[in-house]
Every structure is written in structure tokens, then in C-alpha cells.
Image (cartoon, rainbow, N blue to C red; front, top):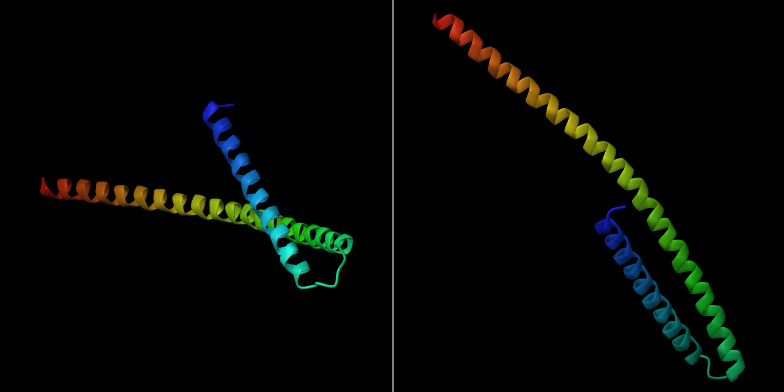
Length: 113
């Protein structure tokens, strides 16, 4: 492996960890706000509701991230294929244009003789 690739991979992993940690912290804040709306809960009940709420929201966030990741992978494949096709068309058009220009130049020089 290339050290630059290793560094980039490490940075992506750190970024992912920090983003997920921020998401979990936001989920915990939302759980606390949710239980604040239920003043009749005991402390133990409040903790249980917050734990269940946070677990459910974390699972939903994880599922959403997996769906997004899968879609990004699909799109990367689709766009890579489209790029390959476009590149092939551009190369073909360039070869045809060079061939036509070369043929025109040849024809003009033969006619000029």
C-alpha cells in the first residue's frame, strides 16, 4: 500500500468516527428532550425511556447510513461506466476528426499537384 492511501483511509475513518459520535450525542440530546416532556416518569423510567429511544434512533440512523452508502456505491458504478462510455466516444470522435483532417489534407495536396 501507498502511504498516501493509508493516510487518506485513516483520515476517512477518523472523520467517520467523529461524525458517528456527533450523531450519537445528538440522539442522546433528543432522548433527553423527549423525556423532559414526560414529567411524571420516575428517574429509573426516564433512564429506560431515554435508553430505548436512543437505541431505536441509533438503529434508524445506522440503517439510513447503510442505505446511503449502498446507493453511493451503486451511483459510483453507474457513473464510472458512463464515464468510460463517454471517454470511448470522445476518443473515437477525436480519431475520426484526425482521420478526416488527414484525409482532407492528403486530398488537397494531391489535387494541388
